[in-house]
Amino acid sequence: MKIVVAVKQVPDTETKVTIRPDGRSVDESSITWIVNPYDEFAVEEALKIKEARGEGEVVVVTVGPARAATALRTCLAMGADRGVHLSDPAFENSDSLGLATILAAAIKPIGADLVFAGQYAVGTDNRQVGVMLAELLEMPHVSVVTKLELTAGGLSAHREIEGGHEIVESPLPCVITAQKGLNEPRYASLKGIMAAKKKPIEEKDAAALGLDKGQVGEAGAKVKISRLEMPPPKQPGRIFKDDVEMAVREVVRLLHEEAKVI
Image 1 (cartoon, rainbow, N blue to C red):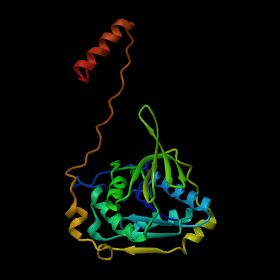
Image 2: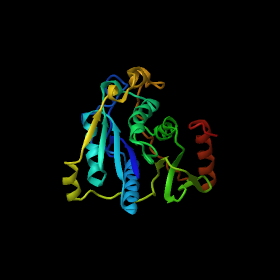
Image 3: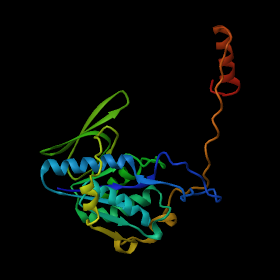
Image 4: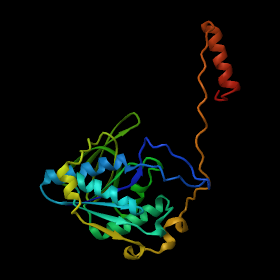
């Protein structure tokens, strides 16, 4: 079985983000980069399937500048077999559809039986690339999966939905986006880290993927960022020391006149 996992390098969730003077981009000079946490669930599930079957190949694919190769090395140290790094200046500022287009162009020739991705990338939180990728690959997909079982006819995927639990059956090939709870990602061992240095990472640009540069990057983006702003400072809380009836009346007044939510 051939399994492909789309991964993304994202800022560490504890990194303090600052906006550049242009107001349209983030200052990357002080950012610590990590593998997107939801993509780690995807990588772990791919490795578990390969190990349970005793055969197969796990390929990790990412789009990004030179630094993104370290995300691939992290996944290789976990146990993935090889990496594909999709890097080209033309890919910069791609929107969700552009990223899905780039990934699809790289994944189609691999002939994957299963394609995994995280449910979303922290930082952008769009939840779009995985499902767009499935459409471009012309594969069925199941999103936000918390449990996965391979069956004789394909797979059975469990999802937590509002007010209930859903089980979806699908044939292979299929695209799965991983939700928290699917598994517990492993830590890379020292042996795995050393082995990762020898595992291959193939680099491909737009020409190698057969992509028109007008399809991707800022040139092909359907969604463009006009301005980034930090959220306003959180207002301090208020403590009401009056009796309960007076306090309730004051809270209602503030919600109506100041917060304007009622």
